[in-house]
Length: 287
Image 1 (cartoon, rainbow, N blue to C red):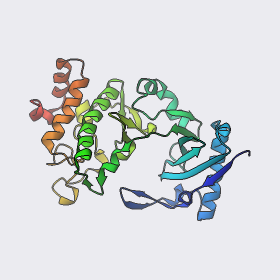
Image 2: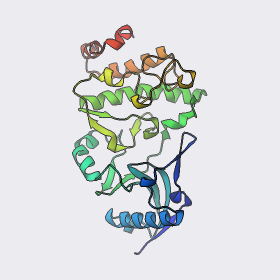
Image 3: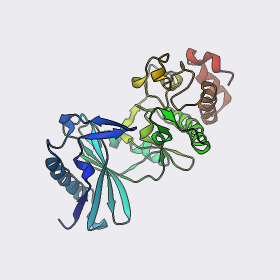
Image 4: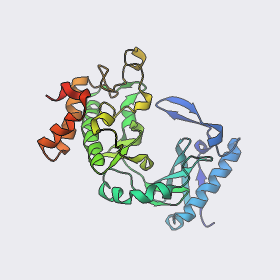
């Protein structure tokens, strides 16, 4: 091996921190039972990835830290010389068996949406490499369950709702949904929304319209929706709560969400037909 790895202590962790909450990783997803074993296994995996992905010529030293780790795969930041990458490595016992199986059918989509997707620069069955995206993760616009209220954050929040609606509808017309939608997998970059987890693209459902699938949900995946009457869940919204997941009043949310779709529609007739597909939004057709 003609290169060396500088591994940060974060790669030995048996937990992740998400939105300020510490979450223990499932034992079956860990690379070893002890920090020492995990570090050794991660070093082996990243060394293998550097070779398989053709990165050896970039630097004689690779600095590695862990960004996140879930049941499906680990996400590492890799600094190589003046280049920075995001390296995804399948977790032990991952339900994902091959990145190739997922990504090969998406090449056409990646080409059309290159500005809005963190397109992989290389991948194998076990590894996926993406270039580092400089931007603001939407999850950083909130502090725990409370959205930031300073003027700059509110501007980005409102713009992100509008941009997300446009992007999701464009994807829908191409036959895809991004599921589940979660704010920590999206980034605001100078007036664009960039989707980070490219394994979340699915064929759009045949038994739902766009609004049935997405209305009220771009910033709140359906699987986390709770009782909207409970004050604990006051920020969760799918057209039933007075405030949506991003802390914007319902009227403002609807205005931004529908404006995004309307501006993406090819005609006013297309927009009216789209609204007509969903009884749940009958009252907002005037927006």
